Length: 204
Length: 327
Image 1 (cartoon, each protein chain N blue to C red):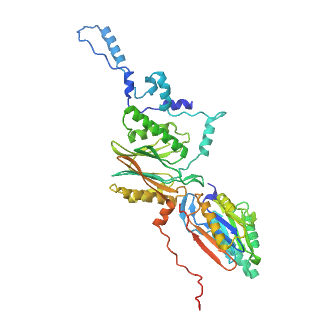
Image 2 (tube, rainbow over the protein chains, first blue to last red):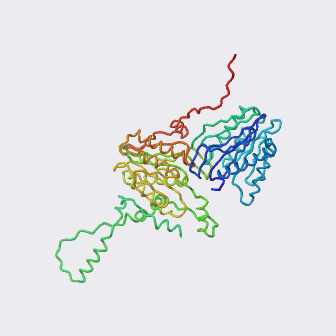
């Protein structure tokens, strides 16, 4: 098994009408053995910007700590929060700094930019940005996720419908993956509120 | 060269078939009671003759075809001999090809199966997930194979290998019944399978199976694997989830359980293995083998079992938005 499949993960982010949702599974494993079923993969940078990190869990945690540090410095200097597009460039640069000894993680960035415009993007472990208007996926279940999202996604969904869609896509995809699942975690962000939900999924 | 190996190492473990006695040479002829004085040379010749007539009965060791006229032998040979497979065409270095093939098909025996003997018979249980690396190819695989109405086999390792060889074993067991007018014992069936797997040792078969049944001596349980190993025992668990299943099984096992208690123990053990092991999941099937044969006790979805054993607790909510009460 490759290093990206050591811990197992599944991440997906989707865009709706002036809102976005980012969802992950909750399993932390050591190859086939499940060690935890409440592992956090989606982290808050500021109220309107979230990052999910799939791949090797230790690299995901370290990457998150480095990014929080850089963002806090930015806040002190600029006296404001980072825009999602700027943040994506920051992540990309940090990953490419380690070009010949990379972090084994694949980020999914989701945020609300100017005029409450939702922004999502994903990157490979070396920092190649991939912007998308509809959805982005990452993790060991990514192939199943692509299929599920492609068939279930509709543009301009309201928050409730977006939540249903992303949950169904996540749960049905991780049910086809040995290394991810054991519950789900969905974060739904609109200009006025943030909803965190834990999904009841198959625990095998 | 390899094809010859199949023939040489195949040992027939059939008890001497009644048909062969018509054809094998019989013992010595009865002597006439005349007092004859023989000189040394004549006595020696007579002794030699007697030794030649007193042949050892090796009908149990040679293959059936040697003792039977050729017309039947050709048909029987196909049934009794282990199936021989054609070498792949256009392959210059077969050994290297075989090493590569073994590497490609390296199965991790991703599954959980268990079986144990208790006072009321044998319980056999398994999950139902088939995985190809990280991908789940099926959640509804039948891993408990019904060899005949009183014997079960479990599947772990390569699915094709297990299915094929269990069916082959079922055929051999039925032929044994027809030839001997009695059922084969669990010992005999497991030995048949173990010998065949031994002859294919090193060729990349991946099978970790348990043969469970009820014969004249009572309940029987054997573990047989593709390395040629065969073990008799009371409790076994096979597969990547077996350490987790052993933990629950060994803790709760008592020989004097009732059938219901044993059923619940097996179900719980497999459930815990599916929770911890990524390569096990789907549906837990539990079978019971009693004096009248096997019976399927249950097939429960593992996810439903989880929420039955660990119901969701409503979490205390820290901040909840509520509408302001009307003034």
